[in-house]
Length: 235
Image 1 (cartoon, rainbow, N blue to C red):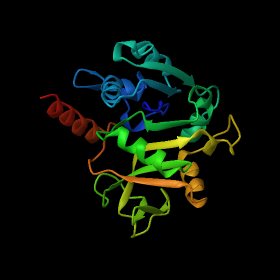
Image 2 (spheres, helix red, strand yellow; image 1 turned 30 degrees about the vertical axis):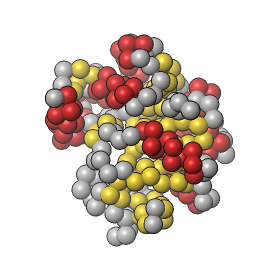
Image 3 (tube, one colour; image 1 turned 120 degrees about the vertical axis):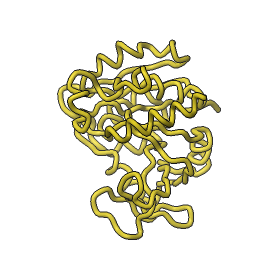
Image 4 (cartoon, rainbow, N blue to C red; image 1 turned 90 degrees about the vertical axis):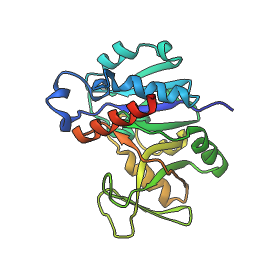
């Protein structure tokens, strides 16, 4: 079986990066001389991905203009626009379901995740569950930990109410069956965190621990660290 399609959630307003993002979406922020999304798409292709669905909103046409149909990266890219109302991360995926088939991977438009996607996908398939969350033992280092993880299982996940037992963080890569999104009404705002919490409560959330740290371009510091990492990898 080949790699599942990947949804990239690239619809955010990127307020933390203003004034850069007043004229361009975050996916087009320059990293080592080219838009970030170019690095992200090449990384996915190296991991065997063939199909990408870009979920876009704010200045999404600019991303489409830049990356096109994906053939320049050896990929096939579809674009799904949020429409007149902001749908949130979960609502955007719900909106993209017609393009995705039965199962798919999800990641954020500002994340650079140097992990083995095939291993994550294999763990999801083997679990037989509705969803999988990747976690990283963060200990509050790169962002605030939000996952209590023990014995290979997620005990608790909460972005708002954090506890001292939370030493892991949601790494930013998820795998879902489309059926996980079916209980929610189409066209309404929904946070992906809500979907994760609901499948966890139903005993349907698998976990995969990743040892490599994640990189993100959501802040000026994050941009600098991502640039340095990509530069090191290119050598």
